[in-house]
Image 1 (cartoon, one colour):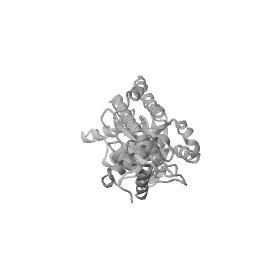
Image 2 (spheres, one colour):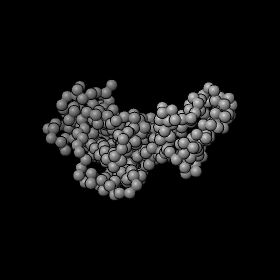
Image 3 (cartoon, helix red, strand yellow):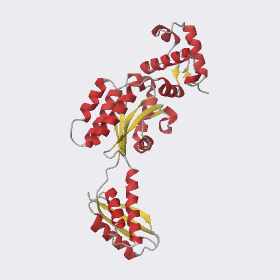
Length: 346
């Protein structure tokens, strides 16, 4: 049973905060003598040791191996991040470094990649950014019958790409309806993105300008929606700075680092995790086993969504690193970077 801020005495809260901050700084178990020497608590090592023992019993601290020191548990880190940590504005030099890389001009893709590199370098973590899969222009949409209830929808993109999907047919669709629908798309919707093609079709139907029967209208709508949804489910993940995860402090925990690097190879899984951040309007912080993906490596993810010109949530930017990362510094950096990208895309 873990404790809460309201249940902790002032003394326990102060000792807990000092242990967490010392651990984040050093990466090694923190002993009572360390707290006694470096703090102004005016407590003896024995008194501090008793408080640390109480915090261990509540599940906020743990004593690894035979060490006399303590480290915060994942529950302890969550309590620290949510209730004790003081988050301020990013440091001026951090803001300047991020803005210098993002505001260099050029394609938005370069700015997004630069933002990831900036976060990676400043946080000593791996920088991550999730961007929507580029939506191709539609050149042609054709339907090939498979059975009375199914057809293969074939989409040809403006770049020449060809993709096939099996689609369920609405009632009343004949072979001639399939041909009619394909011809309509090629004649009226070619050159548009999938989203724009959906909007154009809906507008022409509302205005009575779509020379299509109900079955053909529904068929085209289903075909376009299939690809639009499929593209949204396949975002692009950019990871920068994996080498930052292999530093001197990682030498004693190479198995964990190796596990994390393996996990970073599973970009589809990470993209699904970051989609949870994109679904919300605020920053997300996942600590260790709070997300199943990084349960083995004991890693943390800090991610914030950024928006496009219409205010719509577009993607996610953030960092992946050890659970002992400097949350107080990195959280405002990630938030600032997400807001900078949103301003750039507005």
